[in-house]
Length: 569
Image 1: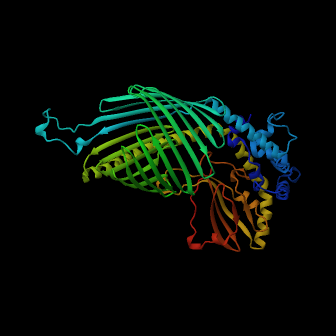
Image 2 (image 1 turned 135 degrees about the vertical axis):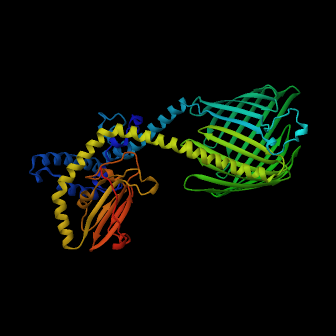
Image 3 (image 1 turned 135 degrees about the horizontal axis):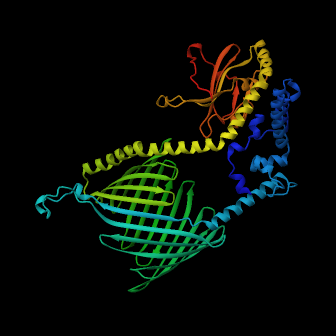
């Protein structure tokens, strides 16, 4: 049942907090004060016109129902968890109604855990990587034409010199056991191989786990391995691994041991010992913050020993574009890397990195990550440090991305968003029409009360709402062709004024008396032009932003006041 309740559409679930204009943490006294105020406004006995009397009765019943739910701790707890739909279920299969709010919440969390476990049993969590290496050195390091065997060919030769494909899936066996099946294929300059692995992992406790691995390949032969992870303290953990490879040259045992410790909140220290076909002792320090990443590593081993230092600076703007730069130096040479990463859709991230090193040369790396799949395209441009290669590796991807982004990505995402909004509008059309009718009825019922409130406020030069609009406003000059979608809410807001004050909570304003949603699924706001102590004030507020007026910061000069261009619905 929890799943069905969570999947209900938001517009079918009336917000009782917004209807009463109270905080989600409102006390019983705050609820009573709001309830009494709305009862005086909507009580059927206060309206003689038969049609208004019927409309008042409907709105009065809604207010009464909201107060009954929120004033009852038991019902309020159910409403907070499941919404209005949870109160309408006959028999209420989730928990017994005699339970306390704390017990209801505990039961709900238990059901959520069971739901997640059922999802886990059905999930394979596939992960994959496809890497295609391109040798494009002929673009910049071409042989002389005298040595070319094929005459008349003026185009540079591009070659795919290496490929790698790997894939893995998970199969949860129990709540603590998981089986992982993985495989990979690799080729480099015409030669290659592949392997397949089966791993069974068991979580032994909150502090550790262990796994057994079985593998086979066309080059190295079968493999049996064991790996154990254990948290020694809150700041330190240990990983041990051993394996036995059955190769054509005989048995190849291997073993490794790694311990790590949190040196501070952003810094880790690692110490690793590895024995086998390649033996080594490695120590490293890694510091990772929001804006930088630093690594210092030293390895002493056979046949490779090195000293490596890397520093990376990260920058992210409001559009989720990350700019990264790093320097790596060691006995193997020096490498400078810089690039950018950008989220191009809900599940896709595109990045490009230029690597310039000695003696590695210049390489452009393109990476596309979509969900759990990764696609890599390293393009090796030159073995030498040529300025032209660095220039084209930097400017080329940027120009291509700008063109694709403008001609493909932006139109696609805009069309996708419009399609989603259109489906949402169609599915909510009936409900919105009903809410609109209720809002118009509420405004009619408010007229007399608003007239008295304005007279009282004018007599003491208090708060007068001159103009109020709610919905989607178009202010960007690049979107002038787009129509504003707003409704006039001057009367409903004036009706909420009390003692020269207007207080709106953080809930969506679409649920306030006299309001409705004029643009389902789109970002909305509230614009107010009001007068206090004979001085003009103006404020713009987001939909779920709490608002309290009057305020000195809202005060405007007459010459700065500009008429609003809005189109109501």
